[in-house]
Image: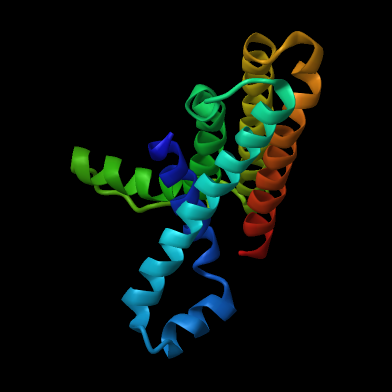
Length: 177
């Protein structure tokens, strides 16, 4: 669970780090760029972990089960993968060419226009949405197995709301960049 929260929090922070107000805060902070940047990263990771833990605590309370936090960690993995694909797709496409050129010793140039901005945006949105849909399905499957049958649907609501918030947050970071 900790690894997945670090993946989500650090990828979210990386998307947020380019926001003009954050760059300004980093440049003017008495903590220095490194100090405030590290603090921001830790807050992002801690925020992901705290929200996840709180929602699963609420799900357990509603659904009549305890100790759910580690049992649902798998539902965050597709979300983390979706964020990673969305965030690093264009870098992979451009720098991947450079890696192949260097590795094979080719006399070629990197084609910056190999994919259009529209294709990149489409891949990013689809990766985030697909990751969240798969995460919701995985969480639903686990909920029906772990929560009391009469309360299983209601117990899923806190985690569902969290995943919708993660989706909206991811898309906001994507479109704000």
